[in-house]
Length: 155
Image (cartoon, rainbow, N blue to C red):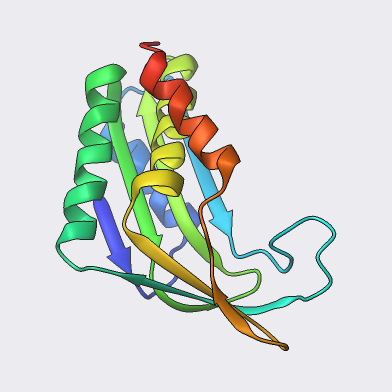
């Protein structure tokens, strides 16, 4: 299940729903990403806000494809992606990826795969606001490298 939303989410509620949907799971993995106060290590300007824009329809289709790829690669009993859009403040939750499977390996790997694809391929545009200026966030080489691992590794 996927959601693109402006509202915050409750981790406890999402865990309970994932556990209920998974039935007899042996492992549940939840990852929650937060808006960082400092985007780069050693940066002096603190982030006041992060605005996420997306293209409705295309974004949901892309997230559904990521979820389908994870389900095809690993034996998942349930999976969940929530990605927030709009203006978020430092410290707020921005993304949740949840996976449930019979074995922890599948849950961990699938969650990491989904997060790597979200960071690199999902159609979100991020604009950071500091006290000095605002600028669009560019993709990182580390995100591309993480994605490449899944393209060359079949598990």
